[in-house]
Image (cartoon, helix red, strand yellow):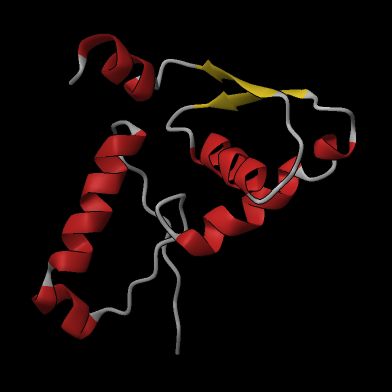
Length: 108
């Protein structure tokens, strides 16, 4: 029987991503629990997001504003552009989860 469990984490997306990576690297845990990620580090979730950008791309080189924390959706948009969707440019709007803008500002 497959049981699913949602878990709340007091932290940022990056804290959650670190926990997921640690869980997948834990052979003892994986021996007892079947794990599958369902976030933007999973290409199975990232690739369907590519299609979010196909409809706006039917316009004449639209500017697409992507609200984001860790930019999974923006990554999907960039993949769509590389696949030929004629997006003019992207504007990334961030919230308090500003890990990527912080990295761009500080290099860390």
